Length: 197
Image (tube, rainbow, N blue to C red; front, side, top):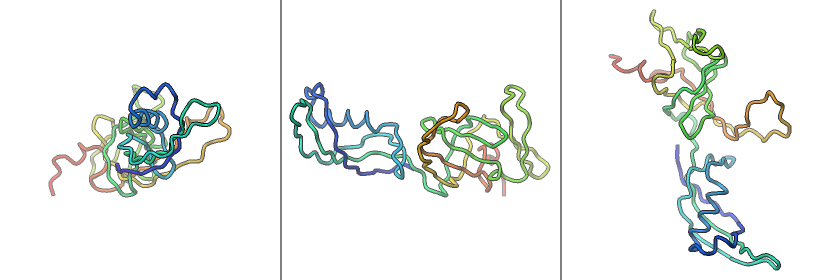
């Protein structure tokens, strides 16, 4: 789920940062550029881990800010397909579930990847949402957001940035995880606690 990724990047260091030690100033600038941002095919940057190498430091004519080429490592969040992760319910509607890890909210479980048979019931507290129920051996098991929900990563997608957005469009998500609940041990944790074989 988390891994180190080594990156090389050229950056312009503002002169106001020159009062700090060089590695500290560069790390601060790199955090501003990469922290909480998605890098396509690498994932979401959670932290700048360390700086491995600093090159150059030249100043262009007419500019008082030095430019550096920096090789550094970032801690990235990018789960692999098949990985099982626990998350909290953020939203439940007719299309499926939206889950959250707290620092990442673009996890969707579409209805075809629910356990079968499942059906929705209207949510009395929110008219735009539903509560999904899995029927098994004559019992109804609710997905109500009380427990953490285990899901298996079905796919990971990096959608292209939209050129034009309509007013009705959902906010753009640079990384989207599609999850599945259709296997033993997946779904709300309470479904499986105390299950005897």
